Amino acid sequence: MGQLATCYLQNIITQFSGPCCVSSVAHAVALQGLHQPSRCHQPSLYCSASPSPLSSSQLSQPVPNQPLQHFASLWKNCCAVPNMHSFGYRANALLTFGITLLALMCGMASFSDNINSPSPSAHVQVLNINWFQKQPKGNDEVSMTMNISADLQSLFTWNTKQVFVFLAAEYETPKNSLNQISLWDGIIPSKEHAKFWIHTSNKYRFIDQGRNLRGKEFNLTMHWHVMPKTGKMSADKIVMPGYRLPEEYR
Amino acid sequence: MDWQGQKLAEQLMQILLLAFAVVAFATGYFMASFQMMIITYFGGVALTTLVTGPNWPFYNRHPLKWLDPSEVEKHPKPQPSASSTSKKKPVKK
Image 1 (cartoon, rainbow over the protein chains, first blue to last red):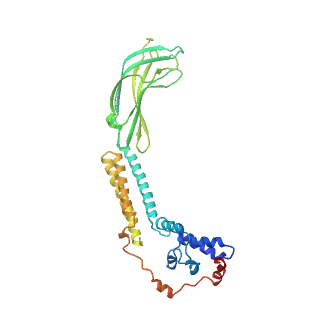
Image 2 (cartoon, rainbow over the protein chains, first blue to last red):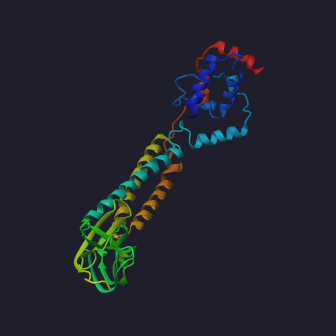
Image 3 (cartoon, rainbow over the protein chains, first blue to last red):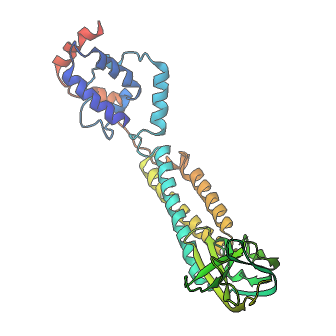
């Protein structure tokens, strides 16, 4: 803005100059810090077309505000437009191009995940039904001990931050075609932890909305959500059918 | 920075950044480490800033030659108008 605006201002001031605009002329004098006289004599980019309107006597007036002048020269050297290729201009261009390339790299990293074709495996063994009872409200509740083993290493690529995994019991009742009850979950932070084996009772309570669990056949399903460092989250599952609850409460 | 220097700085910036982006992506992909890619790239950006940011001497090898000030004195520019100078005189008082 600097010099262009200064020349513009000077043009305005010469047009309307008179006793009434004391303040604007004083302003112009203060602006001389921005506007080095020598520059306007040269055929520079902005000022060559119109001859410098301020007379030489005004230009030679001492600039009263030294700190302002210092700041103005700093601004001019750093960021003002007339210096077309200033440090600020180059830094701006570099930052813009740099961030664009970074976005492009992240996009390519995200795209490279498609090359990976995972082959995860999971296996769950129900070792024991600890107890199986009807709550006072009338809902069935089961507690059981399981062996959960899974190998999810192939889900991990260089762009994977973590994998969230949970084991759900899924069954059908007359009221709902699909009931999902989360029994266990975990966060896998790295590929080294993606092949695991856990002996556990159900982490979250296995309660039906009703009394449908006796002799109920259900699936145990291993669900997982892959969280990449950049890109879209994805989810998948392995369904393990063929589990059955006992016929009687115990 | 002169005109040639500006062109050089701009081209250097683009070429260096692009090269570092390619190198960073390759290292990240083959070392299977996203962090490695980011580190390599930001190192490259820092280096590019150092090379193209400051006004190094090698950007000023083709300075423009202005007319000598005394030459300008011999051919004065036409003054805008005599009325404007006379009107401004009351302001100075």
